[in-house]
Image (cartoon, rainbow, N blue to C red; front, side, top):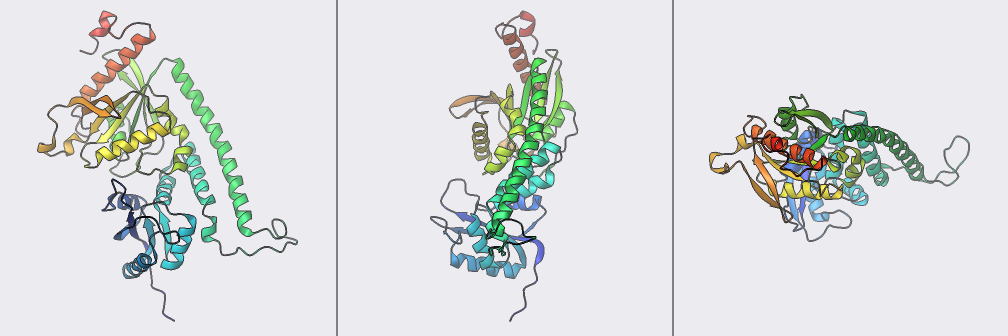
Length: 392
């Protein structure tokens, strides 16, 4: 019998399956960034094409053999798929490959678990992970023989161990939901207090690593954590921003970044955090102007906004990282409009890092706040006269 191959902890093989869908990440660039963010080291990447997933192994037996040989060669301890795989496929793949197998959803959940800081954020992540685990019980358990009953044995005669585990997870989900509900009520109270103070609410939204936290810090002189990595910010941070042009204070919130195929469990679990976007008067949709895939990223953000009920909230597109653009890619005008879902949306180019374009953003925010104040008082946006000149 051959000796087991020693594995390198944290070394992972990345696998992507091209089913002919548009915007397939053929370089597995984003999955690699996710893996690195989770503290893993991608040692190899493998792409294959299929018309449809294999029911048992997702990639088919021949490709599974290829992945196993690659994992042995690279001494990888894990294999991560860029698509969601079913619990049965995951179990079958682990048996065929001889290493742990995970999917994109699990990887995102792991990152969220590492990054959550607030009590609410931790509860939200715990709920999402429990919901994910509840469908994966069949994967890890080998002790599925039926119990015989008797003193000291949990459950009734003939009850499977997996049924007991599922009951325990269901109970944990219920407790976590109850605790999260209390935190959400507190957040709702805080939100209503802001509404009673007639505050103009702005939320920063956008694809992860678009520079939302950097822009937030630049606007309000805050020290929110910002880094050039995916999901640097998970917990919503809210500050007041004073717009001297109109003598008005607005509320601005930095929210969690979106990503392609964001797990539905996370969308559901982060309802309270994303509620800031739903209740906003204006969304600053921050886009990484230097990313060549930014059109697809904009589309992903728009889809999530629709999913959480924020699709009709007015938007301002903020194309960030202007300083990272080569001279030949810089726009001719720093302010224009862009069509999204059949509507013309105002767009500004700026750099949160260098500060270029920030005065124009402040001026536009002042205009929006002034218009909202005029409408609240039953006036047209152009009245009174002092408001007309407030932002010039």
